[in-house]
Length: 109
Image (cartoon, rainbow, N blue to C red; front, side, top):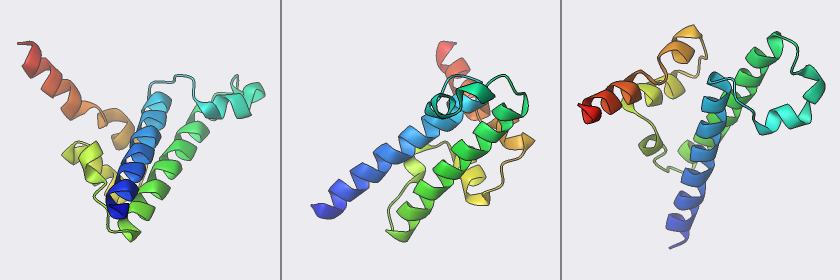
């Protein structure tokens, strides 16, 4: 029972971190903006914010791995591979939603 509660806790934390990261990809407001409101006018702030959100996501995933919890269910297969590679590059930002968008298009047809 404790392991299930721990698993649920980490899945919730992973999903929260994923949403925060996705909000940075979409250039939307995040909690980080509230910490540094004077920085929002700086162009490099958006990149810095993405790296902070990415690191938060990687940290929660790392802890889940150390506890032998399955974190990948919160991601598409491609997204899980990006997280496993740990490198945030333009490819991740450009193609993060690729599978999700194509799945939505298939459902709408």
